[in-house]
Image 1 (tube, rainbow, N blue to C red):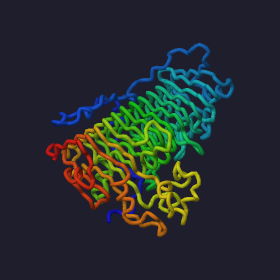
Image 2: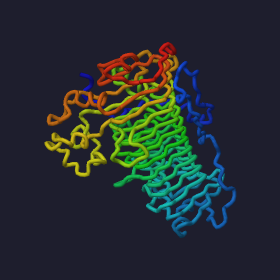
Image 3: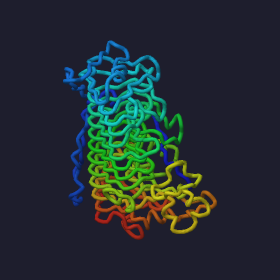
Image 4: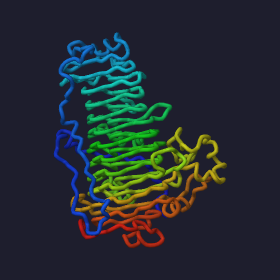
Length: 512
């Protein structure tokens, strides 16, 4: 029968922040010898490492022409000069530690088009007294060459761009050691070459109240050691952590980042995201999944190096006898949707290298999670394809064609030309830690659900166009289809009725 219910939020676990104190470490992507006969397209991508946190800020040593200098010796000088200057002003923060007034709500309320440039050694420090650094709804604000640290935003709130204004540009900036989210996001926001380090909840929370975020760029950043306050343990099942968490983002380019040693997931797209390009990233040593794509649509995930992830959480669940294939790339109630405009109508996962992670890719669909089901706690989101969610309430959901529109379907996922490498002596696992899976639970809830039994499990495995092909495997990989009771070797996985991984190669001897 398999599992009846699976919570999609991943409870976090303790994180060894060894790299937090040594972010200039020399980790570089590597690749083992290509197995004989492996598809040529599966050769390891060349993934740059964005060692941003170890680099000193290189801002202007003198005030640019027309810029307003800000004096660190004057408490509150930055906020005061922002108030007294017109929109579009450039501010140059002199070297040293800049402070706001001691009031917890003291903050810099930016004006449209303002530019904040830090000189080498310029730090805006909240002294663990101020909640927020930069706020306001003004558009097109730029922050460069500045360190922002020691602010204490409440949970689910952010320190920089607190009010989720549009068009902000954050470059060559360190946002570190704050509570809450280091950075919030608005539409057309660009975050480049910045360090999001050691923040209490998220490095960045890409969430905008009452609206979607369009055109988000996250490129060349180091995102390390976030969720230091361990929110999944403090608030079990909250689904409220990650190196970066994305909510209702329509159009995102996540490129060339080093996402590592975060407590919980590295990158987590959750609820009504669409049209993501995730490429050329190095995702490593995150406690949980490197990447989660949940209740969302249409993504290209390519040319990433993904290694040493999910060791903490994967081992924790195995140690307590949980047989679910918690994965390093976890696609949960998410799929390709041709009716929504995007660069693809699939979730395409290709030309990635997954090396020595706890498990590989899991495609999961919770049979009991659909619009207006009591089992769905993502209230207020439902699905992009349902404009009137009352249609999905009992008993209307039981009539066609609402079966498709009233639930998030894990469908049209195309996994090809990847390299899956596993050496169990590196991962130090004795339980099964090299699994691929496409599965659902046995539908049971609520009593009026039209998705009871194996309806969803059979659909995700056989009818929803989820396909592995032309991959190369090295190590003791196994496979799960339909539900956790169906455990397969590579021959069974390739044979009827599953017919997965056509054109793929398997070298099971290494790492066994």
